[in-house]
Image (cartoon, rainbow, N blue to C red; front, side, top):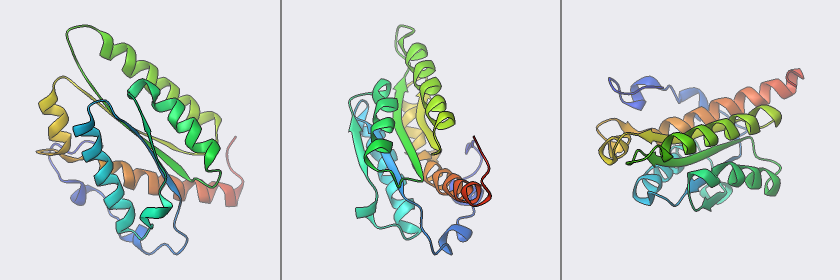
Amino acid sequence: MATSLHSWKEIVDVSELEETSDLPKVALVVSEWNSTITHALLDAALEQLTHVGISREDIPVIHVPGAFELPYGVKRALSLHSEIDAVIAIGCVIKGDTRHDEYINKAVTSALMQLSLVGSTPIIMGLLTTENEQQAQDRAGGSHGNKGYEWAVSALKMAGLKSKDVKRKIGF
């Protein structure tokens, strides 16, 4: 969801989430590479999740070395916490002098999508893929807001969708 013209608060209506009595369980997997960026994204996601009433102690956070390790971290989160309703994978890949970023971005995106589709738990791809560090900073609390808030709201909405699917027995 692009926020170049709007703040996340203008785009996302969280009022329906705040009225939920049965709060979902959301796990976070965060890359340590580009930690200034990823920790700002993590903090925003945690702020949004606690804003709707989820206790910080009920939000597992798993740290992995880099973006490439995010899919394994997600898989691990799901195996350790069977009651998880959604997972947010947070990372940041900044383009460099080689095509390394393209290979990492494609591999991570594909693996996260596979995990989401073959499992029963929604995976939110919180992977910034930017041309430079300034673009990353702009999306981690700068001029474009903080994507961590948006990812948390997406996780809450997808967890709600998962809950509806379970009740209706819809899905794979």
